[in-house]
Length: 380
Image 1: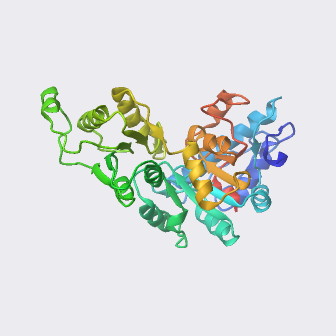
Image 2: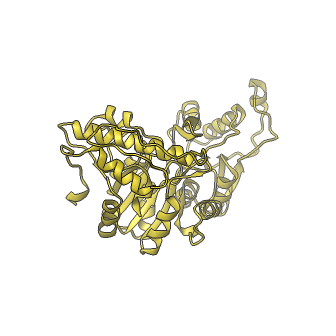
Image 3: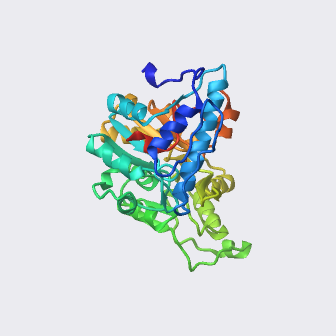
């Protein structure tokens, strides 16, 4: 598989990439880069201001920076796809299944990534297996399928293609606990539903009417109606409180054999056109780990638990499976550590500065991808 490993960019010119990106969106681009210098900065004809436009602009700029960096470097670097045809032909000849992260790849917030809908429709039409692997624990599989079908204008998407961390969590519990075991949840209604539908007795979850705090005296007098529990599961809870932390902490204290499971341990997500950091589920998990002196089992990316489940359930060949993501610490690490073709898009969390600072090889937490492209719209 030498053709998807890294190669050297000693003769690459910046105008190659810009010319192709203009081809991707000809109505919006009015100029391009020539011989590595900018005669007139690529810009968009202002039809409307949207996050999609900003994502495209940022992705092009970030990718151009990386082409310049790897082209000027004497070291090897990841392959950077400079044409849509390069991406399409590679997928056509070497890939049977594609796994997509969602936020930062398919969309950001409520706005689609450039050409995301066209790519999904083309891949499905060409007989490729397509799955959506997200660490977002806000929705169950049915809710995720409804969201993506509507947002991507792709009604042919099925529940079986949705591999959210809520599903991964319920599957892990099913493999390790008996039916009707008691599971306490910090997280969304979607996570509670997914676990309940797998045959478990669920407590906790959204509790908007409960007070946020818990005093020493109140904790001392609390009767713990949910005790005993066999597992505590932590997914992103935007209504997370000190009270929820205290209750979960004591539940784990009272049963040293209870499983502590996290749907994911993402540090943050991006929101808005200016890419603001929204604290992720990892912040909640770390709080409970610290208080309980326990280490959570992570069933989301980059966990091998999740990879093995996907490969087993869908009979995939990892060497012919492509993972497309925007984060090095979850997506790219997940792909590389589990034998898949790893592709980084520059439309989400990872920046060119981050890539350059990591050097040629990256590190264990943030490995360098095999392939880089501006956004998933390059794939079809």
